[in-house]
Image (cartoon, rainbow, N blue to C red):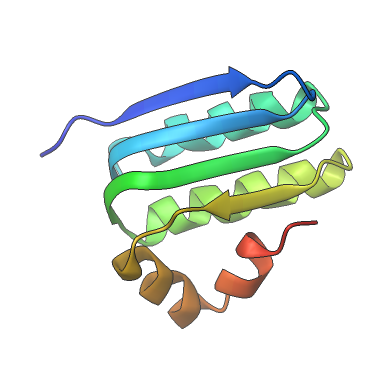
Length: 105
């Protein structure tokens, strides 16, 4: 099991970037979901989830991303993911979420 780190950074433009490193699975998906919810409630100009260093994501992790997207929409915050690995892109495409989560809204 790989340690998962989640860092939240606020940009000078008022946006928030959430950087995730490691694995996103049942052990830590709820923490990611809570970080995304908390970030949305701050009403940033946009919320970007950087997945460059995510090595694995399961269905519960994908659910956390979807919940984060839904929370952001509820608060009127544009939400997108970036730098997903080919593995994660495949997982998101299989669920039909890729286009939704990668559209820069």
